[in-house]
Image 1 (cartoon, rainbow, N blue to C red):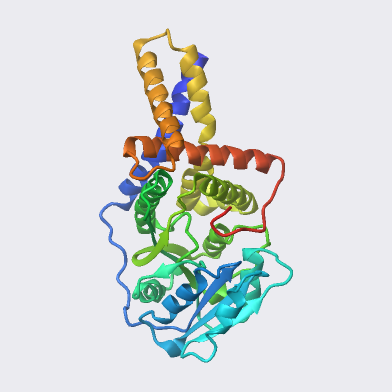
Image 2 (cartoon, one colour):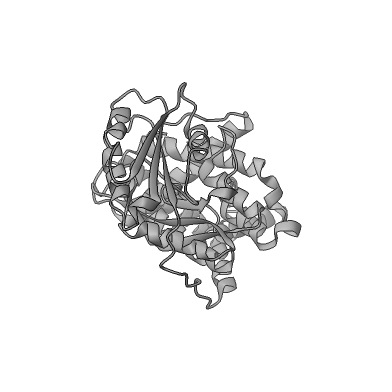
Length: 383
C-alpha cells in the first residue's frame, strides 16, 4: 500500500510542476491584463555588459545598443572585461568618442560575472540599470518597452522576452527554443498575479537604488530579482521587449551550462531561503517553491517513479500502461541523444531528449551542491 501511495505522490509531483502549476497561475491570474504604462517615460539608462573573450560578438552587441530607439544623451554603456585575453578590450575602446558614452572597465584578476557587475554598478549614472549579455541583440524598441514598466512605482525589476534563434535546426537548439517558449508563457502568467520567478539576464532592467552588492558566487540573474522582491517591489515580464540570441547547438556545451546555472540557482535558493516562508511572502513563496525549488528537484520523483513502477508492474494493467509510456518516452530521449547533432530533428524525439538533459543536469548540479561545490568563473556559452 505504501508503495502505491508513494508512486502516486511522485506522479502528482511531476504533473504539478510541469502542468498543474501553470494551470494554477492561469486560474489565479483570471482575466487580468498587464498594466498600461506611460510610453513616453525616458529615464537615464546605464547598460551593463560583462564580457570574457567576446571578440566575435562584442562589437555587434555594442552597436546594437547604440542603435536603440532611445535618446542618446540618456544612454551609457559600461563593459567590464573579466581579464579577457583576446581583442575584446580593444574593440570596446574603439567606440570612444561616439555619440553614446561607452566605457571599458578591466577586472584583473579574473573574478567572474557577478564580481564584474558589482564593480561597474558604482560607476553607472543611470536611474535604470539594464543587464545585457555580450552576445545579446535587442529589437530597436526593446529598451523603451523595458523602462515603460517603471512608471508603475511598485515595479522594481523587469525582464524581457528571450527568443532563441536555431539557425542549424539542431535537436538541442529546438529543445532549448521550446523550453524558452514554455518559460515565457509561465512568466506572462506570473506577472499578472504578482512577480515573475526567474529571469534570463540578457535583457533585464532594475531601479539603480535597489541594486545590492552580491557575493561573487551568487547567480546574479536569480538573486537580484529576489533581492528586489525582498525590498517590497515586484518583478515584471515585458513580452514586447525582445532579445534574440542564437542557441547553443552543441549538447555538451548546453549540458555544462545547465549544470552551472542549476548549481548556482540552488545556492541562490539557500542564500535567499527566507523568501520560501509562505507566512511572510505568501503567494510569492508558493511561486518560488513551485517554479524553482521543486523544478530543480523533480529528477528525484522521476527516478522513484521508474523504480516503483517496476515493482507495481503486475498489480494492475494501469501500471503496465504507465511503464510502457515511460519506456517509450526515455527510448525516444535516447534516440534524440544519439542524433542530437543532426538537423531537423523530429519533435517527439527532441522534447524527451531535452527534458532528460535538463533533469540529468539538475541531478548533477544537486550532487555538486551536496558536496558544497560552487562555481564563480564562467566561460560564455561553454558552461
